[in-house]
Image (cartoon, rainbow, N blue to C red; front, side, top):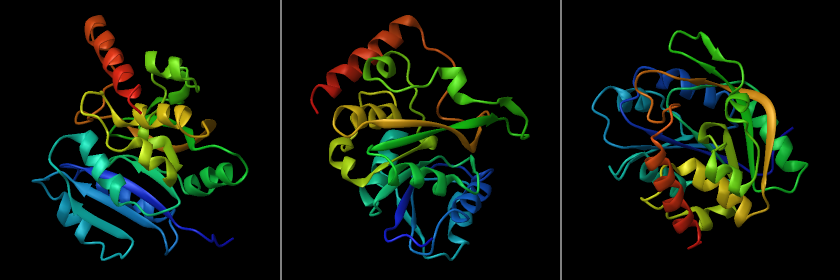
Length: 234
């Protein structure tokens, strides 16, 4: 069924040559001809740009990133997205063929600002490390819950474009952009819906920006306090 709106995918890249082609292929297979993949590259020095530019696909919008780290690289991509719904994407995962369709069905049948789905966690050899990210994180909505133990993983999230004004600018003092977007969807928007469909293969490898290990107690408390301070300003 043809949609009467288009969607955006916001991707932040940096030296992602090893996996980015497989990721882009899986994304484009989900998109209509009217949709867009907005890529902000933060100064890659490998073949990332060469791979992206080889597509010759009008749906791909490539721009230079601000070179201020992953949070602001995503913020740059988000600021250029024009679609009714915005999907977040890392540079090294694999989307399942029905990801966009499944997520949009939730939006069309619910009143929410953000949808987040489950995923399978794999390594760089496609070996399954965890069959459910939700199980690892005890994922569910709730502002206090997600400040203390974050469930919001960007590569599994999609949100309404009208949330952008609340999300941007993304503060430098918070740890990651995805937690920020997810909690603001609950605070400023119509809330979040967690669905248990595993719609991407989430790849963990030696170059991941986000880590699945815990910080020290001091750093964890400091990060949570900084997050609360920044959130109170919105």
